[in-house]
Length: 348
Image 1 (cartoon, rainbow, N blue to C red):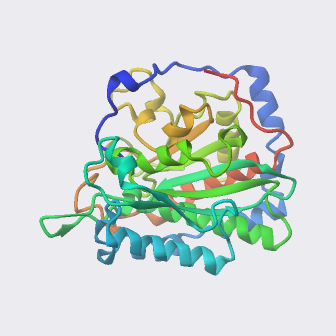
Image 2 (cartoon, helix red, strand yellow):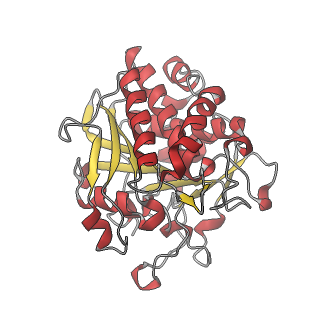
């Protein structure tokens, strides 16, 4: 997650959004596709496993990746691993893009305060929907971190290695469903963005140069740090969910219903408070979608003692909790992908 605050003059004012009863009822009614009795859903859901998340994270957050700084050789090695993973699953890239890579030019980042960062890449994998392929659900996470400092590797296992492997695992689950003849009705874009730590550059480049029209983008479910706990919630089965009711009266309802039908985590909305001094709604990649009127939900574990330190290592990840949070995002995405109607955008 980006450490520096976005300047206040660029921020919209957060507003507290209540959920209308009729919208809640409508959202709850349409959650049947994620019911525990749905065999197609359950079969895909069970594909998300703690041991597989751990296997991938031990690679993504290894010393070999040199902290995955934007455009660095280590980040490119991490990207190659991810691309080969998708190839192995039989998941391709968007046809319009022509590859898994969307170049994010150095000049683009430099003009936005990125200094002399080299060219980098967003990585995109794509599963086309069976009935409404033009409607796109984005599941995002940044795969960059802060690199190596004074010879010490900052591995970023939680930030955002955890989100990176969660996106990969969710893709595996959707692909398993597709191979079983139960692919999503709407299309799913698995978006790994670069340059987050330096200024949300990769997600800004994508929303400035979308492969699919933003008008057709239904939601962005953004995953940034979901493998640890913070001091306030030590030992709890929880996750922070940020921004889920800022633009749509239905997204929060759908996510809560998905949670109740699966692991029933404690959903913490602390950072939706308009008076949140951390201003986390603006500090990860979902914000570039939200400012373009795309509903978002940001899944987050909090600011813990190893945040942006060289001690953010794979041995400290709670893999069972990481799996549960990943399953929640998958279940939410499954419902949005397969419900009859696109979720509404009815708040500003």
